[in-house]
Length: 230
Image (tube, rainbow, N blue to C red):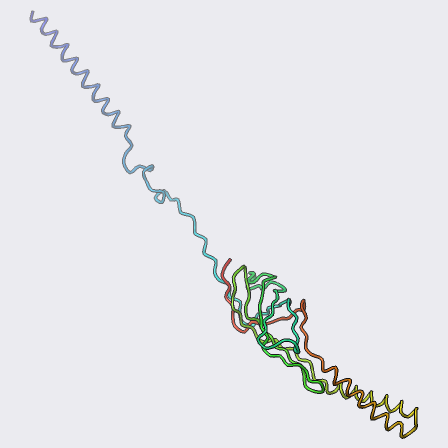
């Protein structure tokens, strides 16, 4: 009887020992499968040495300096006799304006200007004067006020031409009078011829300044012009 009890006790002890060992192995296996904290997978991207891409700098405004040439093709005909101070005219940029290798104002940009001074030439003396300047330019849909130096065109007075025409008329009159009636006829012819030549030159008036449509006029900036970036 004692022998049987002893055997049963040994079996119970072995079963308990086997169960504990299996539990310890399971615990160790489950512990080893859990990732360790602060592993490489848990680190932030910056900690792994990956840098964020550099940001592209914002485009800056373009400053067109004073003195820059602004070539313009006129869309409006201007005349020193028919145009008046304050009249507006229009045109377009004949070629692009480049600043430091960059296109500041494209070809074809619309411009507006005004007549500053106008003076018709007198019938017998004086000179014709026409002065204009730009006041506004449209660049990529945006209007900019613009200040340019005045562009002046002058047609010299007709005094010399009038003397030549009058003298020619007098000489022709004298020749006709001399052939018709001798010395006395020559004197009369000279008076008639001279008066006729003078009257003709006075009736036609002097030559006025004309800036025709499609003609090219080059203005220059009086002040710098800042153009917004594209």
